[in-house]
Length: 501
Image (cartoon, rainbow, N blue to C red; front, side, top):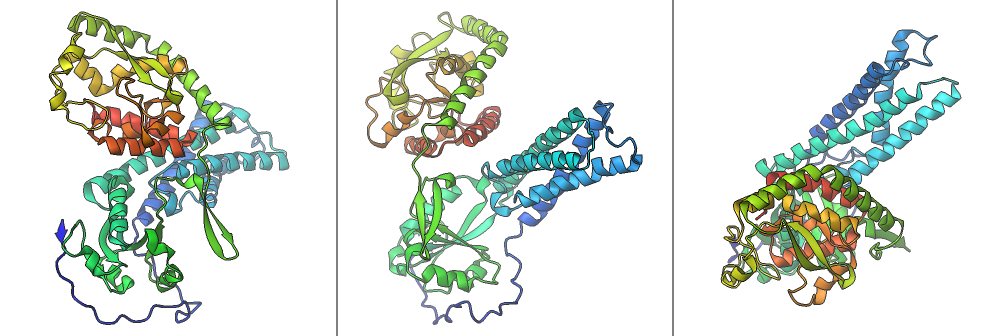
């Protein structure tokens, strides 16, 4: 932390650009942030290779793969299968902006655009076959197209995992940001963007708009400046992005003049409005008479998407219970050997709209755990409505393993099958912990889940306030794509055993 106790008055700064001095035909400088260039090159190779591999597998598996090319040279068939079709994939992926740096490395938009590209490729192949009266092997084409899309998605998941690892361990492949605004707003943005290093946003300085006195005597995580030319400051600290925070973005004309000043500089400009914890799909910019209005839609808590979520939950829970019967039997035997008593632990929990239900879990504590709790209350290692201890003496050894691997949660598939829980949602809290007051009650608008944003973001290592914030964010911004993303992240969290005790 840096202690701010002095300030050097800077000389008058030159006037900001107003969009006129830079020649209209002058070529803008390359962007200062260039991590995306080699990353996009890798994606291009992976996508082309995935499409070519899918074609190769289809040719090897299906004997009628060259149907429709019998009267053409063999070389033409291989050119179409291994060159033109993969190139078509790359072109459609490019057209759907899957290589746009704004969609790379985070969120489900990249994967949505890959699927959209797959639909476009399939439609184009079908149209060309119809227009040229070419009788293609349907199985071969279907396998090649679906296989290509799945391999491309897999390749991008692997590339994203590598990018996140590079960001977390080495601090590379990210954006060095200068935060502009009042000190409280800048510090709030700093806390948000540094919470997850995988995002790749690294604040390196703060430029105050409310005067240097606001920061005098305070400790700040990065250097604080005031009265400076922002672009000169960005170059001085080695930044590549300016983030305008909160009320600074609302000053009439200032944001526009800053955007003019950055023209041709290669520095990115982003705006962090005071509206927080609202995901992109709910936010729309609708210009009216030159005034860009930020519209915030209501959360989608009903409709076809919710029906699809319920159907996915029931089907996945039913199949999961059938497939996991041998594992359930093995766990049950291990629990009975470790401690005489029931295999399952049933506890009242608060569910959707405040309804109480009994959750199913494998028992991980000794049978007298509830009686021993009173003597351990003062050793609670978390805040809020939960009791957590990393080395809880009430947990027997097999139970410790079940908790670390999250196997103790698998019986909750029964609750999912009965419609009391969902695969993804806020975790159900015990019903005897008092009323859900204030913002916490909003968690009850959706069904509780076996996993959720809380679990994939730190689990028991998070504070109560942070866990509630993540749950409320999920409630306000859930979607099927977001659920699938959380399920995918859950696999990595469980394998890494993060925050499980």
